[in-house]
Length: 328
Image 1 (cartoon, rainbow, N blue to C red):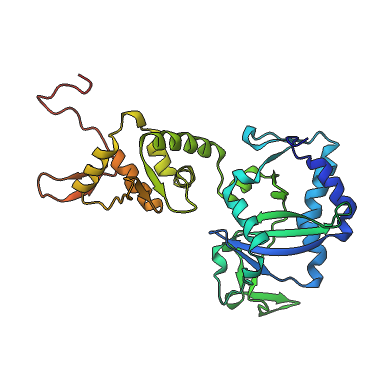
Image 2: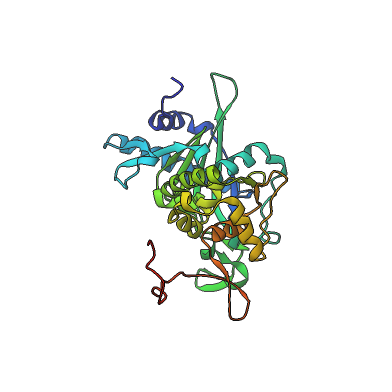
């Protein structure tokens, strides 16, 4: 059936059967989710398959006999003996990474420390392929792991012990490869072994995403907004937790209308751009921050010196003498 959930146990057994025919390719990816090809020695072929593929497959098969379950990630509650699944399309950064590997492969550079800074590396992902006997084609799946780039050893500042003596470090960089199961991506399904590392790896927080989507609907119902290609309001909000928190505290229905907002921006001499249709243009997170700060009336002109300020904290100092209390 089309809506039948992905069967991780069936998949694990299939991979276990074809493990000797599986080929592996590695990619590093940075904090912007740009992938880089990286070669590995033939001597590491067994280790790559073991640490990425076989550990995950064996865990599923062995733990299935002990009651392991697979549940929806969106209903995750930190249970033991559970792996989670979610749709790839829900996790934008993971979807982008897979899209680049699958569709822009020829344009992906090989990683070199001389050209790229290893400290900016976010994770490593292995692409596994094997023959599909039914279709005559090839099947593909991925295993991704979070990397702590700061823990890598650089040859220029490291020594190695060989026998009874120190010697110069023989490599540009040494990396301790994570040996735990974290994330698998099969077809359009993400399998989550480690919830915290999955969320860190792809900067995905389902609860924040749900809140962001709800607030995005409220904002787009009240205001005319135009976004740069590839950007969405809920995506921007989910990425910027402080802004999302500020929007979450607002009663959008009670906020100033669009014409007053634009007048307020002009008064504060802020470049809140509009298109020919009168829609507010949001090109990046800076534009979004300005828009939200205007909604929250976080700018003011000092009556003392005429300077413009951004208010970082609205701490109520008490009612002004002679004014009625708020709400009267």
